[in-house]
Image 1: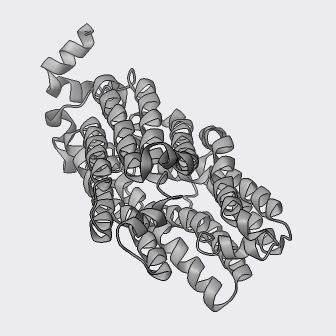
Image 2: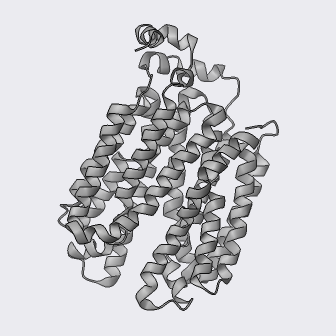
Image 3: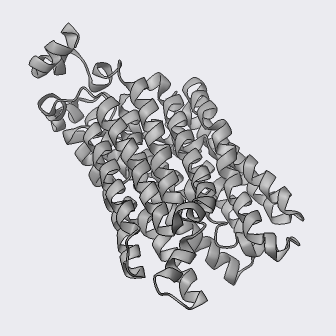
Length: 422
């Protein structure tokens, strides 16, 4: 341990006056970013790999009616998002008080245990309850955003959050692919044990390799006085607009989920290839986001996050409209790739602005609210898309979602501080 580190550990009160949390962790954030990318990838692979066989597992648990299988599969899948949306602000608040690393360890260990327990569920009620608990106690990717969002230097925060987003997107893309063949090797229940083992590896890596210079006395003392002394007051109108935009990003990406199979069936795709084709189209947006998330995050560092947010919202809205006019499934997949490329710049830029909108002592809690907004979008998006598709028409899902994105761009342009250069 360096002399400076020893002084920090021995004299936390002095360290608080000498340097901020970001400055004291400047030597750790890049290594922590690498571990958080690995952990986010691993945990999201484990959580998303059940998608291909979830209805089969629901049937194994005693649900016979096809309509009931679909209903319970949707409830079980969405339960995790609901749980994470509820508790993300709490974990963010605790991260401010007790440190970011403990929240990472808590999320990884909790998810590893719950994922393994899902493999021994006896009925569908236990499955839903355990998926809900996984969201309540888990959230490794959310905890990673809090850690990297508070440790990375401001001038590189966009790039760092973009890289972190790439790891999460890759996990969501690879998970269903793994889930397509792993049950054939180890069985459906065995797949959950494999997922639990993968998350355990992430937990061990987090415990051994993540570094954080956090001291409760120095980093939580005089919280209110420090907030009052902050040079820039909190702009609640800006925060609300950013949280609404984050929700809209996930809403737009997920609105097509309930109608995708029916929509592709109208494009003359054979019935025996329908599920596979739908999976490709669903994964297309994640593939596009993987290609550009880090680059657009770096662009936000260079030209300003507000510009990237407004431009990406307009571009994403523009790519939604032609999706309503495709005549071949590959055209839809290509447009979803383009949409993923434009939408990828939004969440890193939003997280960077949210971090800068509040004082350092409250960034964890505020980023927790940001995670809640995102998961709310993942819940509302499919519900909205399903209702529009059933009551108005499939094509109107794209029109309405695109219009909402354009309105969101106008909202951000309106609330953008005139003196903003971030």
